[in-house]
Length: 154
Image 1 (cartoon, rainbow, N blue to C red):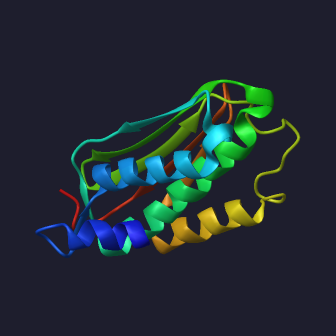
Image 2: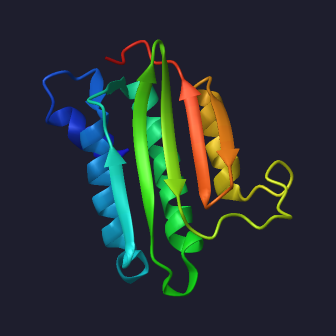
């Protein structure tokens, strides 16, 4: 939330956040926080110049924070190298936020609905706050996609 506030303070438009810039700042902060654990793990931001309302930017930022943190902690065990990709794109009136890693993936026997960790429960709650939909793929790593509408997106 502090990064959202910082981006708003530097913006000409106090109602919307440059989400590409926000994602880059968040990625740098997370890579710094996880230092040695992040070594060998690239973080790629795919931006499309979209701006989000504050009401969408905050939950999206928290979702990205949780999912990237989980990937840094769990997706690349024993110094495994890989990449985490975060993006936000537009499909008409819907937006799609994605967090994808090419790491170890979830265990095959994990029931994501029933065995959800506190972090995944938080992600589900934030997706509900956005009135969005969460889709999880776990082939060749893990991919999370959140689709939602933001009237202020451009």
